[in-house]
Image 1 (cartoon, helix red, strand yellow):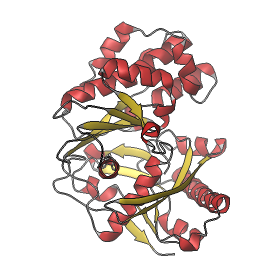
Image 2 (cartoon, rainbow, N blue to C red):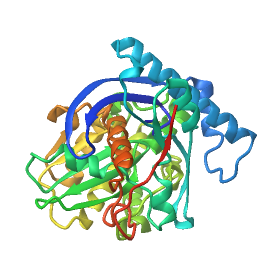
Image 3 (cartoon, rainbow, N blue to C red):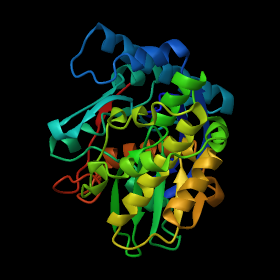
Length: 349
């Protein structure tokens, strides 16, 4: 899995039939090299193939090959023992309102290089059928929380944040909530000379601009009825421009938390617990802000024994198995697709 934060490739092993999780295996995160990250960022928003997108796709595929091979070597697990690889690819453009989404990454080349079956292109069928194509992880979240008190909300804070609400009767509602780490990362890169706000330390020293936060809360996206999804560029750091560096980080962090509180207005019933996963779960300042904004019990996936860093990679293994079995991976209440729908393309080695 490589997310909208463009930080690197997460590799994780999962044993599953696509309905229940039998066990988790080891995981590994391999950061993108700076030049790969720049190559990917250069094609954000592209809608047609070009030399630049082809170079980016090659770089993404090679990075995934390397990451899986390193994972195999580090953990002593032969690739010949792996049944299937789920390959999300790297999202560069997501415009479901135009029935368009693009995750670069060559599934056939990955299968050949690893000698393992690969399923990729897991969003396209949903978008073609009129769905949002995101989020895809809710059916995996439902499998993880099967034995927990509900209703609850599972939040992934990547570049964009999304939530899965799981009801007491196993009903699902899922949607993108708004900005995640993306605007905070961009702010830090442009103003603080760092790729992200490590442990939220920069935001912790700043003061939230409440006036700007109030204007942010009026964004039309928050009132839009889910399912709904976002492109990473739909929320930028521009609304913090002109603030001191720490104040901007604090205000953008508060914005990510406020978006979650606004998302809760769409829940069929209040969430008894918020489970935070993804990169945002490692930001104590953001976690405090989420607790303050939602006024709910906030825990991290790690508190429940989950590996938050590996969760999305595990999810795409889970989804790949569902795809192989022809089981649905998206639903009317998760992406707005007209009916439960499977997806993905299978590549033989």
